[in-house]
Every structure is written in structure tokens, then in C-alpha cells.
Image (cartoon, rainbow, N blue to C red):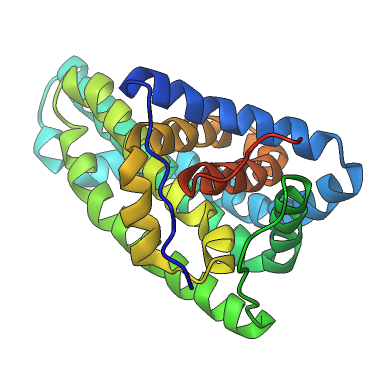
Length: 263
């Protein structure tokens, strides 16, 4: 296989970031124009979305108990400071749950809907001129690759999420800076997950994904953060997932210097 031609960004960091956001919007436009693809993409997202929404609802229900569990030192404090520290602890739990939930939801949905999202990605590539030197990956090999890569990324999100959870207890910083960092980390991990299929079509795996996306990190982050924010909206993850797959295909083509507009 010929060495890939990596796209060299000509805009600044801010321009690249908003270009990434624009790729998600273009992905949304692409799949809205194909109702059949929309239904294919929504079904697996609906299944895993119901599971993760239930899990997050359980976290919200028990968050007060969890906050009290990790702040036993505040048991003897007066009501106002005790309530304040436990509200902060509760927010930290919800922030960690949101980060891990979004990344895990994407991983599980991509595994469940692997053939559906592969088809969406292929259709996008065909509209834009196809994939030169495409590599045919058997279904079971593709599924094993997707599951293995997703497990590694979920594990990484747990390792990063733990210190972010601890930082969430820092007054002001934990409620302002930490959520921004969490969105950036979550967005990056989502991008690396979502480009799995189009990169595999080019014969490349997880290490190559990360390396090549770093060449235009602002665009990759802009795309991923936009997806992350949409996934935090109720039902957003279910409805936006197919668009995220289409947008990730556009991002991959941009990374390889291939056309991302229909001729």
C-alpha cells in the first residue's frame, strides 16, 4: 500500500477547530438526505442509548448517597459547608459519569452497529469518489478489531477520568476548567473511535489513527468536541450517531488529502 498523503492544515488552531465542527454539520446533512441510512444508523444507537441512559439515570438517583460515601470527613460539619462539599462531589460524579458514558456508549454502539456504520461510511466515500486501494476487511475480523480498539479507548478514558474526578473537588476550578478538559479529552477519544472504519478501509489501525490525527489536532478536536456536546443532549447521541460516522469519514478523507466535496 502506498504511503498516505497527510493533509497539511493551512488555517490556525481556531480555524481548524471550527472546520472540525463543520465536518459534523456536513455529516448531518449527508445522512439526512438518505432516510434509509438514517434508520440503519439509529437502530443500534437506540439500543445502546437505552442501556446507557438507564445507567446514567441510576447514577443521578444515587448521586447523593455516593457523594456522602466519599466525603465522610464532612459528617460533623455544619449543614451549609457539608451540603456544599457534597454538591461538589455530586457534580464530580456526574462529570465522570458523563465522560465515561459518552465514550463507552460510542464504543458499544460501534460494535453493535458495525455493519450498519460501515455501510454509512462506504456510502459517503462512494459519493466523494471512492477509496483508492481500499482494503477488504472480513466481517468478523472487522468486529474483533472494533471491539479490541474500543476496549482500549474506554480503558484510557477511565485512566484519564479518575484524576479529572479528583480535580472536580477543587472549588471553582472543578466546575469550570475540569469540564472543559473533560470535553476536550472525551472529544479526542470519540474522534479516534469514530474514524476506525474509514481508517481500517485504508489498512490502518489504532496507532496510525492517533498519529495521523495529531497532524491536524485542532480539526480532530473540533469535530470530537462537537460530537461530545451533542451526545450529552438527551436523545442527542441516538440521533447524531449516524451523522458522527459520516462526519468521521469526511475527517478521514481530509486527513488523507482526499476530496470531501461532491464534484
